[in-house]
Image (cartoon, one colour):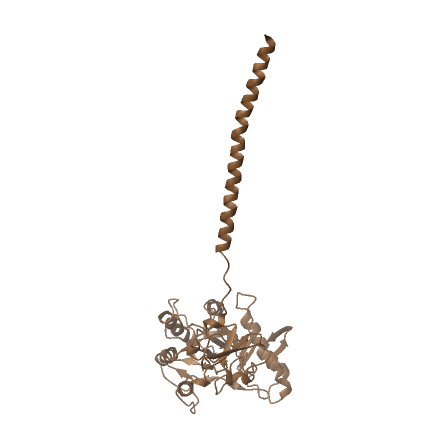
Length: 368
């Protein structure tokens, strides 16, 4: 009897085990099927999400705009802004007129450093210009008694114009000489840092606005290096260097052996090095991609209508209107230099940018 009971218990356990094992095997099979389905779905997704080949940026260049990045660029020279128009003074209304004319004619400001480095970020179809103001007089940048910016100062006019026309960058270089830039003692640091924080640049115009024609080597380095040190003391950003200079009176040393100190030198144990040296007159500058471009001798055009001897800003605006092939026209792509194929001989051979030539509807790539 006991043997029969034991046999029944064993049979019952075996049947229970069989009943439990069967769902486990079914669950395992279901999981495997689901995994296979997921793998198949992933394979299908991978097939659908094949990365397209990247477009050639040159395909986006609008050749109907006739880009010519070997064309000339105007570096405009201003000094004072005042209520009476004079040889070195522009009235607020006339400065506003200048900016509007430039805007409507398709000119757009870039920084001096972008110009000399060839980082032309001007939109396609437009022409870069560089705005400069010499001497750093109070009428360039003045805080009124209530602490607000004078709207009729050069800076006030530039910022207001940018608010009205946001695609006309409020960027300019202010070349400063003397102890108190912009003529308001105690405001030096506030003003210089405001300029840098708002897209402007600060440049060197020497300690005493000295004439370099007959200067000694020691005094030349003191005038340039001493002023660079003085201005940098006011600037919060330790990486910002005063590395551009507008030559006072456009003067250069008679002794050609001293001209190297315009570019670099040492004063009071501190070295200076300039990436741009600006003259006074009287022509548009060459493209930074042109073999004739020389950062040590950048010409400027007087932004005036008095005593300009037919080489003022408006003379050259008319010239470029009548000779559009002489004007720099941007392709809108800083990494590519686009130009008509008959201008290729003007292009520097040391450029690392891609050159893109065109002639009517025929285009051709040229590698450096």
